[in-house]
Length: 406
Image (cartoon, rainbow, N blue to C red; front, top):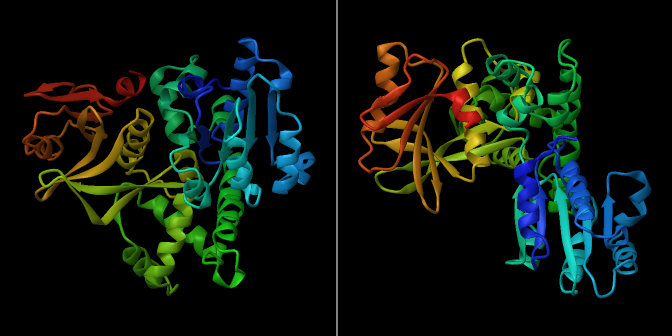
């Protein structure tokens, strides 16, 4: 199993706190493994086997427990008296009305609850309303490049980065033999499961009335997801997607596109980044950018082109900033753009991402927007080339591989 040290540390930090730990993320990114590792850690700390209740709702032997009343009875009959019981409910979204179980368990003494889900609707429906202020979300992403490199330490960091660009960061892909491209079959399985099963499950939960379901055309959903993968790092809107579909003979309204894009976002396949006016400190509603959760999946869809290495590394940097705890937006500075405005409670950082800074025109294009920002927060340009590295009047140019491994 791939040890996710940062996420394990987060679970340990929240252990025995009176909050429900909600672990979210796309399928096969390591949620179940994380819970298994944490349970092993609990046992090493002296927690007895009978104090741990662990149920994975994707396992057929637990199908009966997808009835929330039977699930509640099963768990309450096994609660320990006078000591903590640690409850792990994996892929809980398959249980209709699961929030009733979680809410009832939450109010009991000496109960520590951990749940996982592969759909953001888990936290946008009744659970969020019922448990407002009672849960903390731990959002898991596929492996960072640093984690990928640690698992492939027999390679040079440059070769490992090339593999990461091609294959992505799903934990199983990082540990398998990738020499004959077998990972593509594995990624195909993930993609189809997310697009079909997770989106369908989300739509069913969101619209119990079949006549009100909004995502009914899986072919259209796949077409939109493939288009979004091809325009990673470029501004998009529901209208621009609808126009693209219409130009290819598929007339679709902007409202329909909105519904389908929302479904892809809630299934963690794509993450949106809104535009942010740096001078006015305002979020702008139009032309957000979309980033795909994994470059291996993007490659499987066949949307990567030879000349879009810049967009691929931009995608990597976006998710790395999320891993490091930043809220990430696209920056607008007058008529120019900064790739990322990364914000935390203790300050802001600005990032430009480019494959190379060697040509003077590229150098000026990347550095000018940062020079136009009038505050004194850190400003950085990340690049694959090693010849432009340095400090240019406070703007730091750094090699992206070294930054990812920092």
